[in-house]
Length: 308
Image (tube, rainbow, N blue to C red; front, top):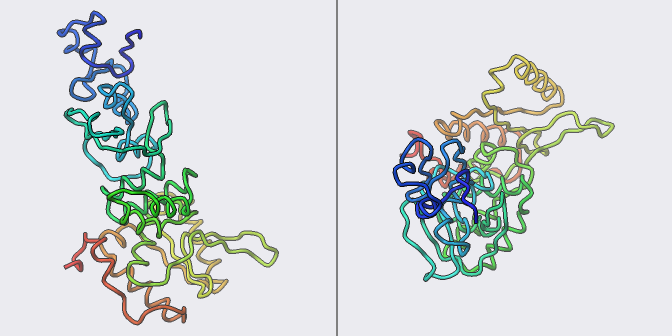
């Protein structure tokens, strides 16, 4: 194969192509991973890093776990190192910055020219690395991207033999279609883990003729309660602010109670958010609303004073 420095290459390949060790250490090249280089002009994207991680395996490994999630461009927390999988333990190699797993005959697919774990397998792999809420965020994003369906994840997690199958099954039961953002998933999980009835996702309000007049992130149509996550865009632009005012006026006219929630209501004051929602749902007489909230949510939203 011809030597192309615009794609990741190993040190030995560069030397065989006539690049001196001194030149390799100079400004023309950059280190992607220990022992793997690329031309300095190449932008080091997640795909470039994964290709560098796979170089020592000569085609017998594939990107898995966090590396596969990054190739798919799915929302996960920052996770150090690249992750690859091989069919059996004897094929693993030790390289700094790369963790090798034994994947057996796990299903794979090709994305951006890289062999990666299939979405269903990736979900199970990440169940061993993510918290419940972050895993549901990942699943919701997979469904939003049409990589899988919630039923696909449930069935695969139920059938697969994997050490992380149990947490994958638990998280798959919470994955829903139609979720627009990770923060909406977090808000929904906060509500559900507190023992409140699960709200519907993407509630559509229609007029007498059937035309769509409003949409809400989460809601309880029978009680006419809508819950929305408000990002910074809602306060940074006049247009968004005016649209919000008009929508809230329309909701009031139709008898709906609109409960906006901002990021601090999830990360800093989740208990206050739950109290608001709980109080409104009880006042509206929604069936299934408990007298007291459970404490199950606290372990998953620990960044606040009430967690203690």
